Length: 473
Image (cartoon, rainbow, N blue to C red; front, side, top):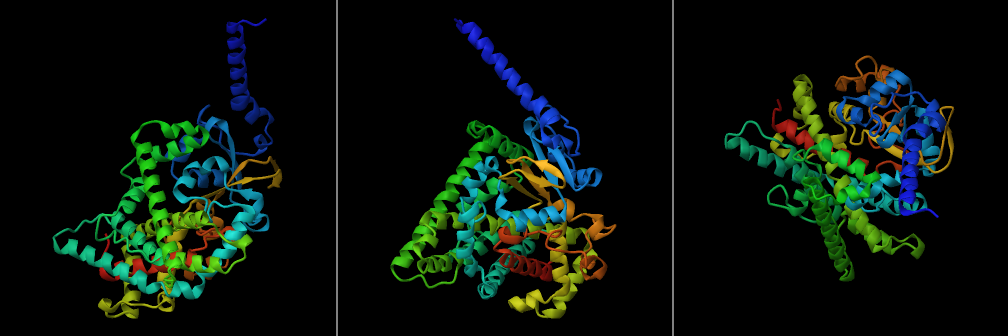
């Protein structure tokens, strides 16, 4: 019989053997992915993770060096495929979209922040939610939101003017633009006045703790990724984890509160506003039982709207202002276009069609989205074995679409692909190459961003208001 020490010895040897197999033998000698070119791992434990965190545009450089399908080693030498081939992207985003799901192990944090709404739903659940929600994002509904965008942008403008009048010339706009976009989604999403621009707001503070640079963004990202492999990491009593958990509690509580208020309005026959949640609840009433969303699913949409509807627009607006400050001539050209279209800036009140007719504004918006996409990478996992780029990709392999590499490809965008040049969108030499599979700021196909028209209109109104009234340096 085995004594205790022998049993422990066998367990230790077995564990060492398993680790050796997973870290060294499988990835380098057995895995079908070993045949795919890519950078050598820099660490036994962290693979190429250090380069992803610390180097500038690592995926772009790897794509340029190794081709449009690259193998990268992640934590514990787990192999990931990075692609920048338009045919492969078409297959993933359109032809066989439900054969590629969001990586399950990466969902832990996202579920707590977003809920299992449209962004994280899969398969038939996603089809049902998307079909039900499409009418709420119809063109006419978005057009009616423009006055709300203008109202919040005006409040932001007045806040900045007040600071300038008090003698401030250097103003950190990041928290104010984030609060402005939160106020917008409160109004158009739920007909709810967050008023975070003009007063303290717990929800705005929660999102700031999740996304602001006050906490080290590299450390925050590292903890998030590590917790997807080792969930107990989120229970370590450190400041990043405390901030994350407290923020998630606030987001969950506030989304439930919004859902309860809307349900009460519906019960009393008072649900007549055209905010997104009211539209969804009214649409939901008309559907057969098998197509209806549950109250929990509707709450998940609130969580999704809150994050997707404000943080991405906020960051994109900030990038646009940064680029226009860096390239003042482009800023001047945009201001000239705005001044010509709206000579009296005190009466800046464009319609949806008017703001979308501004040629150079459209160029700047597209170029900002090209250089700094709201989501630089799209991650998927294949649910069955696939042949991709001539290579066997075993099921459950993480596949990343390198949007940043596509958006800066010299083959598509010419020799100045890394530069901010809005005029390229007026040049047929470049625009003739642009397709839904090489310019994807809102992804494409069935899983494209349902609110892209809303986000673009809001972005244009905010940017136009700020550039028409202020100079950024």
